[in-house]
Amino acid sequence: KAGVTQTPRYLIKTRGQQVTLSCSPISGHRSVSWYQQTPGQGLQFLFEYFSETQRNKGNFPGRFSGRQFSNSRSEMNVSTLELGDSALYLCASSLNRGYQETQYFGPGTRLLVL
Amino acid sequence: ILNVEQSPQSLHVQEGDSTNFTCSFPSSNFYALHWYRWETAKSPEALFVMTLNGDEKKKGRISATLNTKEGYSYLYIKGSQPEDSATYLCARNTGNQFYFGTGTSLTVIP
Image (cartoon, rainbow over all chains, first blue to last red; front, side, top):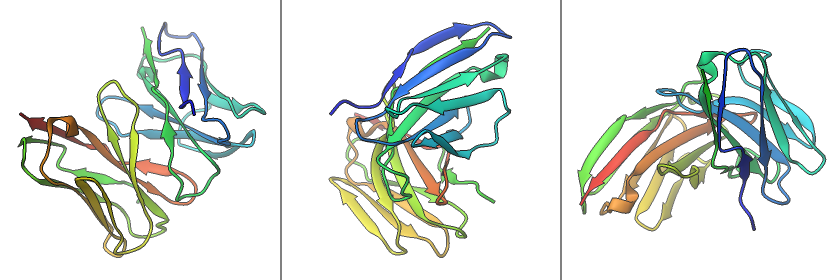
């Protein structure tokens, strides 16, 4: 079974631009979560999608948004990029939304904002 | 308070040594604790999911314990090998989302 894939793997943008990141979960998984990691910080939860609905949202500004499609693929969008948005963005999928379920992570997208 | 804290931040051990690190978390509103291993240039890999107070899980040379009443979990590695070098993350699940610690970076010196 193919793992979680994320595209692109690396991205360079300039301040003010917007960016869209993509995540394809493991086949059959319906929950996709997004995380941001910056130097010195743990993984910070952005949001979770389940069956095309955003179920939970972390403490991030409205510039960060996402969506999930009927095939469970998810996209994350960041508008009006700031230098502080430079980070590794990881998505993780799980079968459903159970708290006991293992999350399977993708390789991440490394975003650099200049 | 939702913070998950891990200690130590980094650790260097000799090959063959056994080691352990700690994950501390608020004991209230606890649903599950997850441990991950994250090697450089790879994706975080799930090690254990622990839910019950007193849980002990084992996977090869790696084991973990859980104390939900006092809010901590220990991860043990017996006979460390260079391939164990990685960052070990713990994450608390509150039923809605995961809260991750900043990890313990382990380097095993051959």
